[in-house]
Amino acid sequence: MAPSPGARPVIGITAYDEPASWGHWNTQATLVPSDYVHALADAGASPVVLPVQDENDDALDALVSRLDGLVLTGGPDVDPARYGAEPHPRSQTPRQQRDARELALIAAVERSGLPLLAICRGMQLLNVAHGGTLVQHLPEVVGHEGHNPTPGAFALHRVHVDENSSLQRALDWEARNVPSHHHQGIDRLADGLCAVAWADDGTIEAIERSSRPFLIGVQWHPEADDNRSLFVGLVKASAEVLAARA
Image (cartoon, rainbow, N blue to C red; front, side):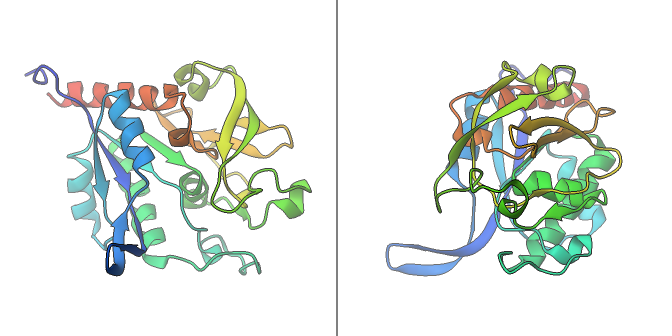
């Protein structure tokens, strides 16, 4: 049976679990920047927010079976202990439960073959999940603050994409300025992942697994960009999953 007319692929968005305030309330909250929601909706998906919580593999597989795609969002630094390193003085306080939740989701998505877009922290966690390591404070390596010059604001810097990559086929550009905000990056690239985009200073800006139809990580923030081509590519791949399940 074909999907109902107008059916939109359901794409999960991993949430933050952080202190938040509104009105007279100050509380711990499950939240996600609305740019992710708008980017997916604009591209033709039905986005759903996935809270940080503990679930066993069976429950995660059941959850993933109800999704057509997944976005791993940005956020705080991955715990250095996850890749066998001591914390750098500039590393942020780890969110242990979030790290564990998203690593388990990565494993469940890869068991299922679901399309995955990993953004900023998400790309870094994808690399760690496969045995890679991270640079804990990128300015010490590249010699400048260009990837994260202003707290609470995105910077623009140029990215060049491998013309033979799955990422480039999803995009409508090969080189452009993109919004970025990160002080960490990939150090040792995990086996099985390929670097497919770079900043002018050599920082890896995107990775993918070429054996998968859509398993892509980007270091920049496409949800904060007016160019939606990467989300359109994710939604297209997710729509194929939806159609195959019908």
